[in-house]
Image (tube, rainbow over all chains, first blue to last red; front, side, top):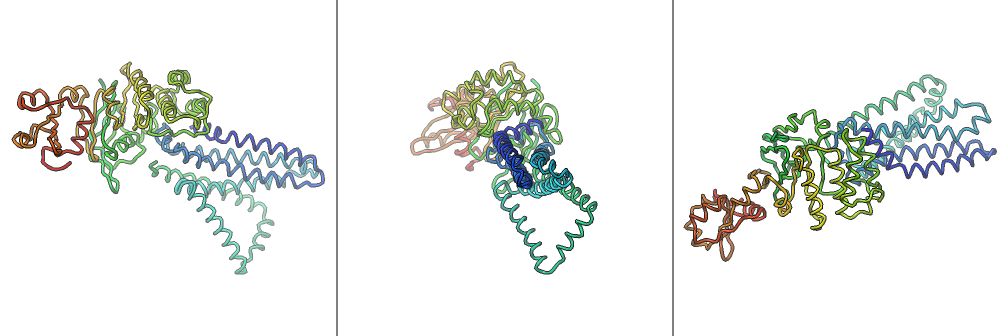
Length: 214
Length: 291
């Protein structure tokens, strides 16, 4: 399975090098601009999202190269093949967190508060894992093109439901305030929901992968 | 010779095609050609052996182990070459070496470099810059660099020029020369199989027609050529299949010498694999129905 991870890292190597360069430039800029402490975290969040999206795109590259046909003939189980993609997601997320925190150094040094940026990074990581959990089974089931459209469809439906809830007068803001006041519960839910979704998504993807005949 | 691959009643149904229960054995140290027209079931057979396609019935045994539940382990000793290159175009052969070191337990970077050198594949050039022939040679180098006991090739030489095809065939001959490796080579380029195959299995419309040694086919099979009236008087059970055209009848006999004695007035030529395939697939059979 390490071969599959190496393959994804090699596929991303060029993009990661470019991102590292941009990240460095932005980090220097954000560190030197004392008048805007939030620029670091904003740019950091941007890079974070890009990195998470990038590693999902390896599946699309595999599809394009017809690699999946060969993969089914290699000495790797379905569990290992899918696990390699999910591990790449975790690696991408951790890397995103590191980059985000690096961008927040100035803010942390100025305010002395690292809990807040760390909380934001953890929140972004949870969101990234949750998104990957939704996206992977769609990509495996419908292929990268249709899967991505469906993923955006799911995201639009989710936003529409929230919007409809607001229009219908559901006390969403009150719920957000309540969660903000109950930090412990928020942390537990913020951690457990993405993790459980991620694990469930993995087994769902394995089952889809096993049925696929590339 | 030990049997390294055994298919027993293996079958698979699709909407428009069914692979009839297939029984096939591949001894160690041989090259077996799997011939048949497009859509005859060659690729399906190879994919069923790999376990990348589900079976509807039957049993596949590779290296003495049943496939079910052992797929990943068994594939450690199988090399596969498809009819197309399945590597990412942004990669180089050097990258593939890095990847496959983490895939196969027995991967040998030295062997890979040796095969790439033999086939003149540049290690640091991107695959997108390779010609189809080079991509195919690269696929074969990757497929044999972990020293597999069994090499499965699916139409690997189609679309290649004669020079590249010859390179590939030479490499295959070297691969089986130690008699520890076997090759199951699906192709409809019968010329290639006439050069290198020890055995030939013929699939037609999802059904295995025969498995014979190539020498037996080439030395014993024959094409009897005669007029329609003459053919009408002949014993049809002497022929596996026949075809009529405007001028003559061509009939396939499984025993050229016997046919020569029995029908001395007819022209009887040696049958090539292509003749055999054409007569089986397009001719009329002994049972008198169109195949």
